Length: 156
Image 1: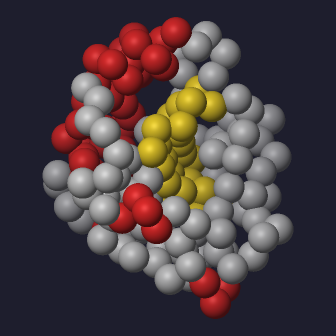
Image 2: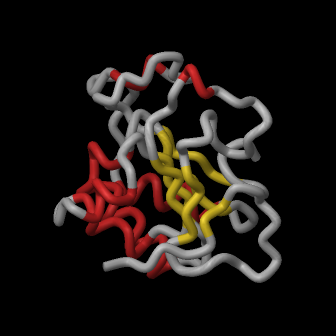
């Protein structure tokens, strides 16, 4: 429940070049850490849990954009689950890169931006520093009550 609202299946990927000072998961920076799983293996786990939505974290899923885009596409095609994704990239950086932006249509919420240790705020929900935004990519749910969210950022 720390990786988004409600029950969630969190998929932590290996690999991150942002190297944010004070990162809560620096062991995930190593692109060779963890163990390999296929999209099908992950999807089987996700589909087996009828109660939980999905969170992508890391590392940074945008460093494995091909696999995470395919996983997100299949989640949306084969389930009714929402997907939250954390990244050290900003939405604007992702939108400016045709390769990275391919994942955006499948994500419901993007938590963007690098963690800034000097701005750390433990009172924030689902992020570590106030520069990080909770962005509803397709409109906020009507019962949204998460302070600090950005209601809607239109995709280009």
